[in-house]
Image 1: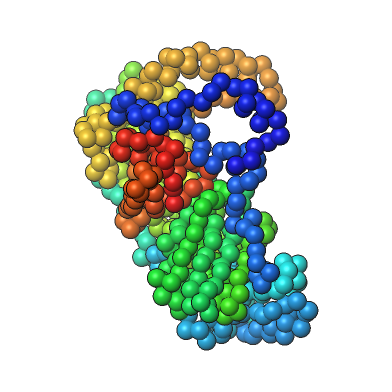
Image 2: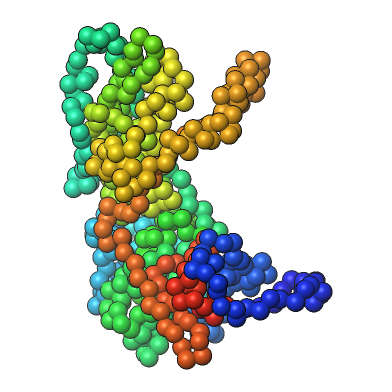
Length: 546
C-alpha cells in the first residue's frame, strides 16, 4: 500500500528486513506476541475501504429510508406521488412492492416480530420504523424524496408505554422471556428473627438500582451497497454488519431470492460493539428490495442522526432488591440472602433482549457467595426502538446492580465495602446459584488477584489519602474504584455459540482462511493468521483472510 509522505525515505535508511520465510522454531512463537494489525498501514494512510468508500458504477442509486414519525398509531395511507414527482427520484418502494416480488416481510433474530416495511393497516410501534425506501440519482435528492412522502396515521389510543416504570405499571412485558434463578429460601431469611442464637445480628437493606441506556456510536454508521446481477437473479451485498449470515438470510427472504444466489461481503467495519449484530439487517433488507426491483446497484448509508434514533442501544435496566447479611460480635459481615428483580427495556421488538437479560441474571451474584438467592428477570415491551447487543451483553448491568447492593449493605453494616467484598468472595469448589462450580475445571483466580493488586497498588493507603483530601475540600472530591469481576462465556441463545472455518492450502504454499468472525478494528483477522502459523508451521505473511 501507499504510505504517508516521508516514510519512504525512512524505510530506505532503516536496517534490512529479516528473512520472512524462516521456519518457526517452536509451537509457541507467534500466538501471544504483539503483531501489527493486518490493515494497520491502510488505516493509518486512510486507504482502508469501508462500505461507503466503495467506488460506484454510474447506474448506482442512492437510498434514504422513509420513516414513521408517530408511534402506537395505525398506518392509514402512503402517498409516494409527491416524492416521485421530484426530478431525480427513481422510485419509492414500500411493502406492496416487496409483496409483488414475493418477498417475506418478516424479520427477527429470535422471535419473528419485526417487518422490513410497515404495511398499511398495521400499528407503527416506534418512531423511526421503516415504511419504505426512496431511491434517487443522488443522496440529496433521495433525502428530499423520503421527506416528501405523504403518510397518514390513525388516532392514538391510550398512553404510550415508553419507560420501564410505565411497563411495570401496565404489565407490558414479553411474558415468554420471564426467567428465574433460585437456590435456598430467601423468604425464610427475611422472615427470620433479627438476632440469631449465637448473638449475630441480621442486617437487611432494600431499594432500586437503575442503569441507563447507551449509544454504540461506532464511527461508521450502518451502510449497505447491493449490486444485482444476471437480471437481478443474483445479489452481492456489501454490508457493515457483524452478522453476514443473518444478513444473507434476511435479504434472500425479503427479495424472494435463493440464499445460494445472495453473497454478503464484509471486509471490515468502522466499529460495531454489538450494534451491528442484528440491527443492521433491516436497512440491508430495504436496500436489497430496492436493488432487486430496480435491477440497479443501491447504496444506503444511514445518517448519524437516523442511525442513533432508530437502531437501538444498550438496554436500560431497573433492579429492585432485598439483601441480608449477618454481623457477628467482631463486626464481621457474612452475606446471607439476595432477592432481586431485573427489568430491562427491550423496546418495540424482542431482538436479543432475552439473552441479554439472562446474562444479567448470571452476573447479578457478582463474585460473592449468597447462600440464599433469587433473581427474576423480565423484558419490558415499550415503544422505543428495539434494543440490542452491546459490549458485555447484559453482564455489566448485572454486575453494577450487585455492586450497588454490596455498597448499600456495607453502609448498613458499618464495614468497609472492600472488606465486605473480600470476605464474601466465592471459594474454590463453591457453586454459583446457577450451578457453575468454581475452581474445578474453571480456575478461580479472583481472590488471589484481589489480594495481589490490593497490596501492589496500596489500595488502603490510597483510600486514606482520598478521605483526607475529601474532608478538606468542599467542592472538589476524589474517589477510587476497586471492583472484582467474573464474566461468563457463551450465550443463552445457543445458536450463537458456534463457529467454524475453512482452510485452503494452495500449490504455491499460500493459505486462504475463511471464518465466521468479522473485523471491526479488534484485529481478528490478524489473530486468526497467528493461530494458523502455529498449527501449520508457516509464516504469517503467506496468509490471506476472508
